[in-house]
Length: 226
Image (cartoon, rainbow, N blue to C red):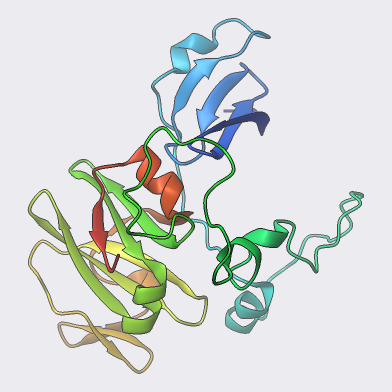
């Protein structure tokens, strides 16, 4: 609808809780679902338990994106906010320093409803996907190294493929177990070549998350490469 989302200032599983400015409903970022209503507006309770319509967001660098899409239109960098868009606003959350660096504490700063069992670094990045059969998480590092990872949920085969240029991945249902093989220019599937983002299989919305948050919301998640 015609509304804006903002930051509520609250967290669940150390993950952002959004608020919408039309009805003051609180929305979980990972689950994309309304969990409670604030105190400012009436009528928002009808949204509790409902989920947002989602679309794929690519988390990559401007350099990688520009190389893939050199004609991209940048609307403006003059946002009138005192912020440098040439630096990482999350600082210590970058993958080569701070909490990611070898030998430094990796635990999130706030309590989790469900702690992981300790066998996986809590801030490892996964490509997470949800289906009616449950959730599944692919280790991003392993996916970028191996190009193809295969898993299953509810007896249905699921395949993840890497997009090396953008350093991300895509997830598809593959009930017939069709071979997906990396090849020059993309992936070979039944003799045809397709890009990582456009395989001739049923796409499952996937996004990148840190393991502690994904596991906190989906403790029974399937694991591939983890």
